[in-house]
Image 1: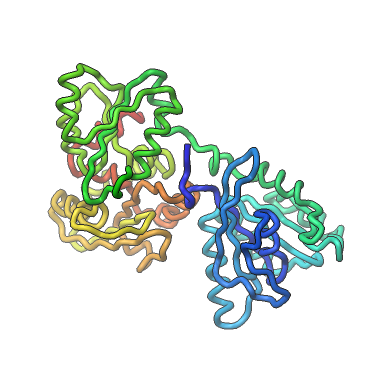
Image 2: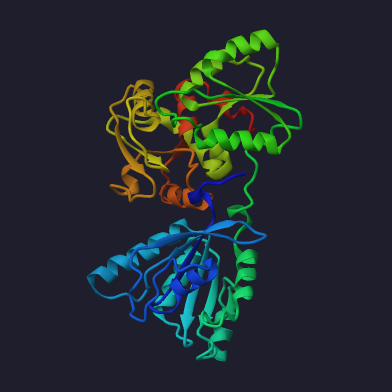
Length: 400
């Protein structure tokens, strides 16, 4: 399945200033994409670079500021460095001169808390070998990290590092499961209902629709793509009975009336919810919409940034539908991309996450983890829409 830049597995590069983080990225990519300097603190904000690992997968390398940065700006850079751990699938921690202390311990503790596997590089072995006592200590860490001794100058250890990346990065971050593979079989007809309105990108389909088409083809099934205005006539004139119909969530109610009751119906957003998100938590959290009270605050999380229109699904339609369904006075906050929340997660009675087509499963799950840990119910755009429109049971039945 093709993947957008932000949905590729992310590998974070960490370490003290001048440990060789930027040099490692330049060596892996074969390009001078990260500034290398003898002066500590050259890298300020996290920098991303795409890399195609041969016989593996495309990945994103994330270069971060030194964990030992100093000064007021240094404190802010370190905060951003720690923030990146929420969004990566694998960490590489670089040390030199057998130096291991509080800075490295803090990183390892955060890796463990976020369930991020990591590799330790001892760099500059052309100058200083890894202390045997420290090596034994690192090998005894609970996470059992792979330790690679290398030199960015001579490229000693490069092959060992690449092999370690392939072996350590979680399969779930790059061997993406099928959207529909457990539901459809070879030769099945899948009807995709795709409205073309002001939110549709000019000349293109939205990413979840493209992903669904590719997944159907990968499963040797047949994709039929129609606008909602053509569905009724198509079904009547052809007599075709699809194995399943998938609709854009914003016309869920219309699709429900168009698709025969004995044909499974779900949405692109719900497919992505099962594909990437915490589906069990969504299932538990969605009915909590009915329990919202006057004055409750709802958080809506969007994985991408876009122009807001009067037809905007997340910022206009969902709040309107939920207010109408509950007949309650509710407050809504909206957060795009991976921006910080405007208030504490405990201030919210409900969190509604979009499909997350533009971010990795790890990023999406990390985004939702604070709410889950705080006991805040979570749901997904498509599931919330189906619930308030009275077709929730039908929309999720196919996954049961």
